[in-house]
Image 1 (tube, rainbow, N blue to C red):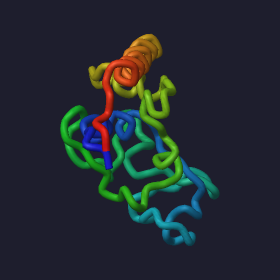
Image 2: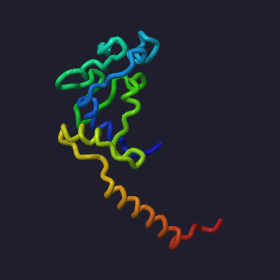
Image 3: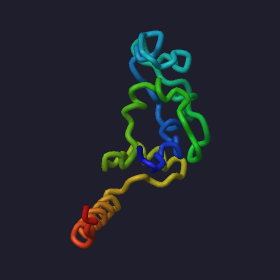
Image 4: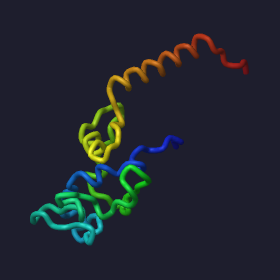
Length: 139
């Protein structure tokens, strides 16, 4: 397990920026695991997480202050859009949606391709330096 703090636990911007809509059967009254009482109907086939289908969205399951310490009250039972949403920089990929949500709350972007390239270069140079100049102790 990594000791690095996941930036999502100090953000929460996506939970208060997007409407979280998903197929109705993901709710527990349709056989899924999302608590139905925390959703609202959009169409006969779609639901949204409560609080996200408004002019100023904020999922009712979001706990804490955006940009501070946050968590999802139903993390293990969250719907597919939440499970599939990737933070910017995850797997070395940008995510403009993540950056837009963060910007709305005055948070800096998590990922920039140029910075990632520089970091990757330094990491690989460091690995090369170590392999060329540092010898492992004899066994």
